[in-house]
Image 1 (tube, rainbow, N blue to C red):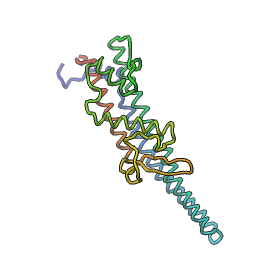
Image 2: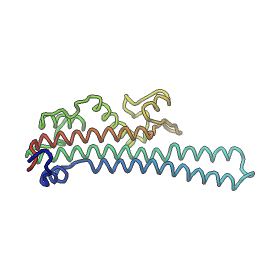
Image 3: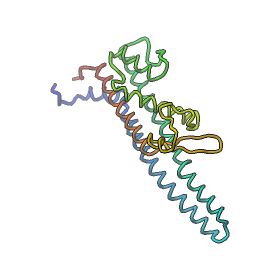
Image 4: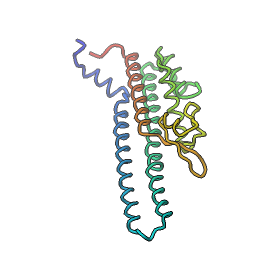
Length: 235
């Protein structure tokens, strides 16, 4: 069979039997764009509502009350909505990454009929488990680019901070902690304060970069794992 020939069996094995993460990644791309569209819509909608309320009581509101309503509008559209929607996206993004890698690892275990799988390894944390499993089972490097490994570690740390500590800056990975708002912004994070703690909110550019990071690594990881298990295409 020539390289250009189409094999239905190979196509089925590669895209149905093998847990390719492509559909999950495309779902995340759709979700991220929907979130950004929704944030624009919510900003406009809340702005109309705030202006209408101020106009309805024109002349009867104290200037401080007007300022309070404007501050409330700003807090909701700049802090609350992005915190919930973008923060939730980062949590889901890591969940898809970890789940996809585990699914591929389980496929590898079944194909090689191994008595142990990725999750049975005692390696300290998930990324270390992946490194050990891929090295032992596939004789490959899970993270040939150490910069990618570091960025995934940061993403995992940010996910944990959002999921378990409400985005508290005190619980961020050391590499993401900063001293000023401009330094945080340079890392793709907004920083805010309330009565009890200082917390971060991912920017639009951060979620875009994080999605590309996960998508690129999952694509390469899946391809290398598949070719290692099935070096010869089905006829």
